[in-house]
Length: 301
View (tube, helix red, strand yellow):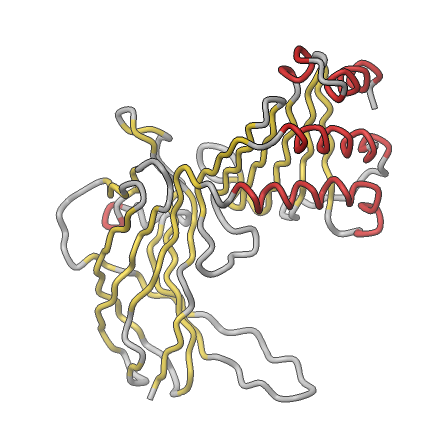
């Protein structure tokens, strides 16, 4: 570790207010290709400052979990959390870890630490778990902090799918509903589902579905072959944006054309994705990213 940085971290550990005022720790987890406006398709940023402000921003679940909210989270944490983080940064000796081989599309973690006028930046790959062992206590503490701050959403988006539980094995047009939920303290704009630039791969509101594979003991089930159908708003009001108030939810109804090829039990979920547009619209925040709804079982007869 840079000796100037290490000295500043020791001062912060001793309670020096000037050093604590400078201290900042960031875990930036990214995966996939770049998106318009910068960043990555999967992008999560966790920060802790010396005054105990813990912030998490997430534009997409790193593993595309159903029903996982995205958005911005913030809380005031305890001084002990800051002291523990500083101690673990020093013990991890990140600059002494061997270099990691990271391919462009791999999931990677960037750890940035700033204090005493020095910034330390280290990129960690996840393909060699043994090489990460010295940093494991720090990474586990960062996971704990991320889980903790998710209980304090500032602006969040979770989507819920409500649709028929059975359809015929044929081309069928049905109506369904997607509920946009915000459990945060602030409202925000979304790009309206009817205004998405669907020619762009990052702009879509779709239903994804596939036949659930049969589970045979002793055999690994094959991956689900997924089909996708656009969700078309039933009402075309010509709106560019959808306002999602703080602590509330907004229902949107859609038409959808499905064509399940064979009978059986299917799994379906809605996907809303929008990365384009400015971060603020006339002084109000716009939430950008990709969210996945709850998973619905669908009987195809």
